[in-house]
Length: 379
Image 1 (cartoon, rainbow, N blue to C red):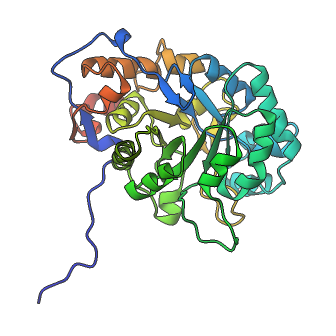
Image 2 (cartoon, rainbow, N blue to C red):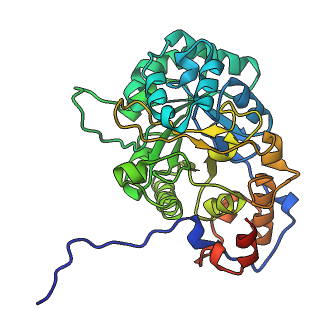
């Protein structure tokens, strides 16, 4: 008896399953151009810090800005719920594993203080750095005017999955094209992982798209909801949407691979898969200046009974400058990320990020299975 297939599944790939092929031409790493642009803003390095409380606070945003990157402040986290967030962050870091999930639920159940939104934005602006802030779609219409009045530069609308078509009880939900007209700043939207969703978001006038559902170190979406797409495939699909939108409109909208990057090799593969920039969480949570005090946790805590983020211990590896530019004190690829990117680009003969998009990648055995026996035995 013939068996009819119910669904056709396609193979998807994560960072561990691919490798970058060296180019036929090589270049000096110091001749590479890795600028990243979001409309009128240009950043010296194509690296963003995630809008997570363990990663970005006012001080971290200012520090990363001075090093050439962009940090995004979560306007629905402890920075806007508490007058003294450092005390709350210390409480989270000191909680036992048994206590931490109910503690996080309690901490994130406190109301957001609108006056603190403006206060945090003004503090970042006072340091002379670009201020990017993040809110969930449900609070976007409420907080967007406040952030604009406070002088924020880039507005990020972010949730686990964001689309342009959302079914809700609201008579008139969030419409990105209208939001674009209402606030005078670039708008970045995330997260998505599919060609169709990404293309529709871009067609609404959005300035950038965050790519990634499920791969983050502190994210439990794959385990709790079963939802997600491995990052190489997700980035390639959204890069295809970006290129198609450019063909249709003449407007280039950058995509930012968000989550799942644990070392320089992953970061380089994200750019080879089509990313214009990357957003980092757990790597930056290991910085001496990170507010998480050696811990990292997911940002999806609004649901009172189904938190989709877990606290993980990441430790402290070095300063933010060391993580970005070295000198490295470890061999796991978690430091000197910018040096890794420039070296990979030089090895592939890619002088720009757009050139890096064109390099060849192959499906490859995980690096732990390919000639690394002694490294595994000593780890």
